Image (tube, rainbow, N blue to C red):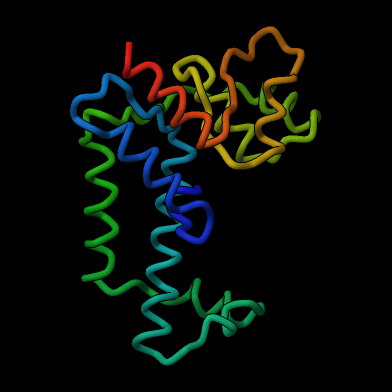
Length: 174
C-alpha cells in the first residue's frame, strides 16, 4: 500500500510504478485481488476523510476516536467522489501492465505464514501472488522475512522498493 499512502516513501514508490507501467517495459505488475480490494478500501476511506474535512469541517484528529471512525464509516461518499474512485479502479482493471489475480487462496499456506509471524494481509497477498509473481516489492521488513521461510512452496522473493528499481534497471539494460 506504499503506493497509495503518499506519506511513506512516495518518491521511490512513484518511481517504481512509473518504471513498471512504462509502455516500453516488458514488466507486469501482479496485483492479487486481496491487494486490489485493499486499494479500493483505502481510496474510498481517504476520499471520505477528505470530503468530511473539506465539506463538513472535520479535522483529521476527529477520526482517531471511535466516534470519528463511526462517522466516517456511516458517511456515504458523494457520487462525484465515488466516480473518481471508480475511474482509478477501472484504470487498474483495463491496464495491460497490471494483472489482477483472482486465484483461490490456500488458507493452509496463509496459516503457515501467520504462524511464522507474518500479518494476515501480507500472508494472503504473498500466497495469492506466489505462483505468478517473481518479486514482492515492500518497505515492510517483516514481510521481507519471507525470503528466510523454509517452506518449499514459497517461490516469491520480497525486496525493497529501491532494490526492485535496481532489478528493473538491470533487466532493462539487457
